[in-house]
Image (cartoon, rainbow, N blue to C red; front, side):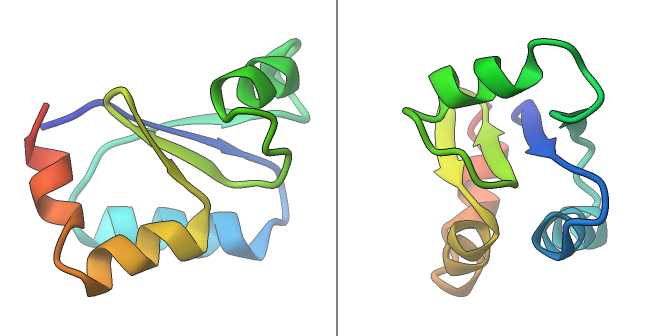
Length: 86
């Protein structure tokens, strides 16, 4: 299973939805709160090509994007293969 990293903030409804989907699928992920971890916001901006909204989700080396992007992969039946690829 691929390593999943999600950059989040507290009280973010989109972060909550993304975490809920991954948890429902039994996927373990590393959550990095960009408001609480020093340097995390800059790290996220660099990894996500300047995207500044949360969540920003990475599966392995693939930048998935945000919550809507994650759910689009799920609808297109492309999320599970991506998760298994790693």
